[in-house]
Amino acid sequence: VMPEPVDGASFKLSYYNEYKSYLSFGSILQKDVMLLLALLGLCSLGGNFAEDAQGKDPAVMPEPVDDREGWCEGDRCFRNHRGVVLVGDDDGVVIRSPNGISELRIMTNGNLGVFCKGRHQWSPRILGKTVAEVKFQGSGELAAYNEYKVIVWQAFVRFKKGNRLVIQDDGDLVMVDSHGKAIWDTETFCKPKKVKDEEIEEW
Image (cartoon, helix red, strand yellow):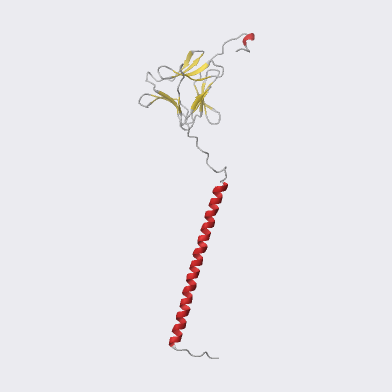
């Protein structure tokens, strides 16, 4: 069956209506796509919120940095990330060994000194220079500075990083790394006082 012929006006009107329908459909399709993308974005954002709320795997999280200054107590000094300036008490004592006979002091000239039963055993060689400050630095190095903040002495640790200073019962001042390994010491030795058998419990 042959289709009935249509005049030009009817054909143009039909084409225009189909074109409008196509544009309307395209606009709806575009809106649907934009809505879908927006929903996907919200889902992703919600996933991030959920991840933040639940917390990340502690195994891959960086450890928090303890930004406190270091401190000295008992027989040791801890440098921490900001380091610690070694300061003595009224007698100049910075730290004292557990048995009480060995001490690390800041002397009257500002220099470090290791003492055993009150006798001087060791000090850094600064060749007559003035020491204004001794610091166990955040970088893990022990250094003495003059009044101009210039290093006049530094413990040689061969690129290793000290974590704490310890004065031992035997009179040796030891720098220990974070694994508990000694990386530097003064090589000083203090003999304990001789005691009689009946005095051992009191000593």
